[in-house]
Length: 380
Image 1: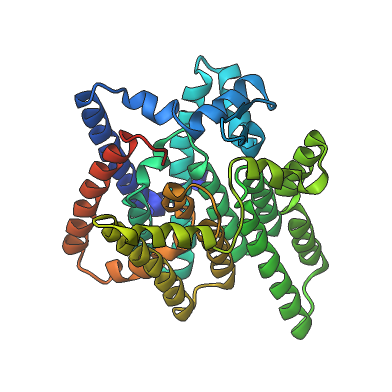
Image 2: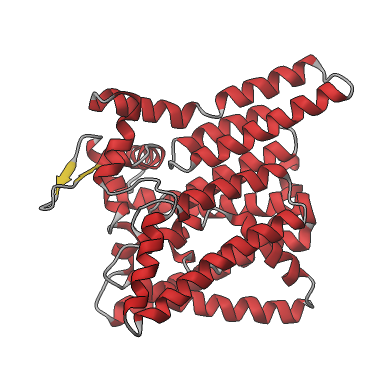
């Protein structure tokens, strides 16, 4: 218990600040939804992807919807860890599947905040760690962290796996990467980070003094464990559909999801410039993508550890270069928390009173935007 108490005390300001920001977002959502005659609880637990997850938890895999245009939306597209946890909570508590998903998301968001703090504190120190967590909390799409979606769960597993890599805990890193791979397709980013860090560590050991045999075996076993979650689910889907190892890609194609190098996204942005005022949205999208790429370049220049750069690069590439629903791209980028580290460094240089005003103002704007977004017609 004492081993946990000290890290928790160090992380307490970050976790309390995170909880305050998320509480503000939920209060604003409740008020906004009530004014529009909607249920904030329903918006958080029973719309869009949340419905697909709870259906998997309740009925298992095999459900699909055939659309008039011929597309087939199969629940095999949704990775199983969140539905498994929803089923577990439903079995051992009075919670419904949907409320189980909400509980998992709320707890996982705190674990993610703590993991982000741990990674950032390890690299840049405690003050920057607190700032990084607060910036993650006030993202415009931060309300998703409180929904019965899998982003919070994935970010928690990814952040702690990265922390384990940075501190040489290879078995922990590999195990958490395995579970991240059972949560979302972007679990490949965590696997890539573990593998690149492991290979780099092997090479470094060969050029210096040999590492102890036990450490070498733990590192190798961690690397072997890392891809098993994602690979296991993808292969199972291929077996279930009868289409072999690439069967999961066919499932995603039914949702019009695929990796096209960003061509579809570029066309989507280009179409915004065919009229006004949609051209303003096109400019906003270009500025947003440029900001993401600039933050990544700054992270490289500031010497972020290689595992963080690999992880962030893969998450960013999969988000920006996929042909999926374009309105979801900000949400898909949310796990790429190392993009926020250059901003956290800048925020940490401000006086505490000034940084508090900055974070507070952005938190209010984020809460209002989140309430507006979830009360809209399209999925986040």
